[in-house]
Image: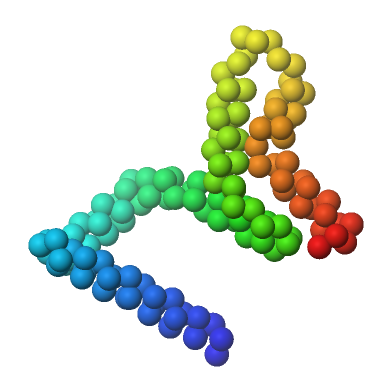
Length: 132
């Protein structure tokens, strides 16, 4: 019963969001059916567009998972998206810094120091030693 109720609630929230979007579109003088159809076609029109949608949403999904891990371990962290961007920048820097002749073991150390992995390790240690 709980799963069916969750599905109904999710459908209600989706329909409510579409209704708000339709009201806003009508307010600015646009046709809501045409705009929402265009959005759905551009996001899910064919396999290539669906793959692009998944590719664009992957960083958001990783950020949501990182936030869920933080909240589940009892840590309040509002900087997950910034840590994600910083980790990406560190990955770009380290992948293009072959000319600096860094040793291979410096790559994981660089990712640890610059990315959000540090927070995950700290949360796992906190959880393991019962400090939650």
